[in-house]
Length: 113
Image (tube, rainbow, N blue to C red):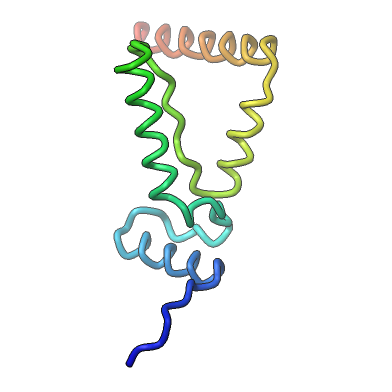
């Protein structure tokens, strides 16, 4: 008879996940410097919730261009996403202006080349 199934410790689960990603050649070998987001334990729930929100926005609320939020894999990505959520309108406008300026410069370089 087999004993009850136990949930692996998060550190062990992170190591297994890294090994799996490497076996698929999905990431480079320097993944050790990144710590995985603890919310990945509930990845299926997060993905299902994101899909339900998308369907609600598109088909019920008739919003044809909903913003799609990526599910953060590492703690660094999670922190960056949380910082974006806290940005003020002025900070967002500055980022947009900087991106547009960079886009214009890239287009100009491509046209001149």
